[in-house]
Length: 373
Image (tube, rainbow, N blue to C red; front, side, top):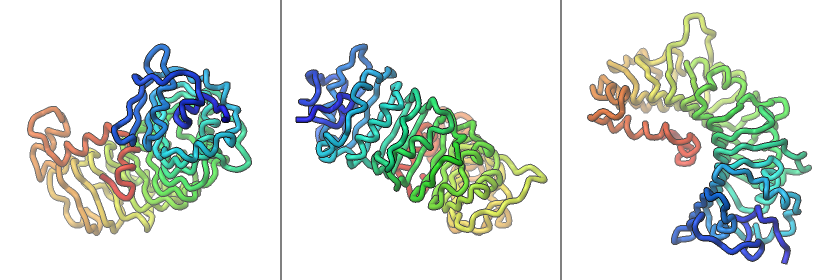
């Protein structure tokens, strides 16, 4: 039997590694569907992760420690154990709370290229060193969804280019939250031909200028949903200008949980994409409907703002579905709740959505890729 490197603890049967399984760090549900591991002990029993071998959804937390000890197996040819990896049920994987050498990241992705993994989340990771030269052909997994939250890369703005080279084409959902750098190296970045959802939520320092840098021109030709919750956006018009520079034409735009203001006098005008039919402006502190919105929309979400009166028809686009719940003119308690959610008299329409701002935009998109919550 071929001996595989021990850093593939999630992927191979326990007989291939060295120590006995310890049950404490990892737990598997009764259906063998979800496995959760949290390696916080000073001397963790890494082999406990073998319990996850039959799980569909796996979440591993490394306790913030370095994974350099697994580097010795990073140069193993994954073809030696490809059949075993192909047999895994694994579809969703989260790796969190660790310091990971970039060489190990590349080796892990190369091994997962033989799996049926569809959703990968990297969270609270520090990736050290540079990624190795990419293979001639994409050798990593054929992901449909990739989520990154609070992941730092030693290579700065080149990180997305380097990561992309280790993934097979076909990614549909990309979520990047609490990023250390969103100023991508656009000249080196390849096109994301199948990407339909780009979620940059929870990057409060992004702003319109950062958005223009992140939306590399003509790299997202299939984009349908652009999600920008809690990103320091100030005006819808600024987002329109950034999208025009990038050449993206989404159907849905989410600007909720930003402190929006009126467009400054004299600001350049902008023509919205003709494809855009839904805009979410909820929880944006709006006291009036912003001017310069698209002339026609299927959905306009203005819930949980500070509108003291019902908008007049001339202030609105021609819209099929208008959401105004949680505004003071409909419920006087709405303003009090937005100012202090701990006060009594909770407004359900706002209370439900307010919980979502504490979640990663990743999870929101996972729940409803086709629309906004």
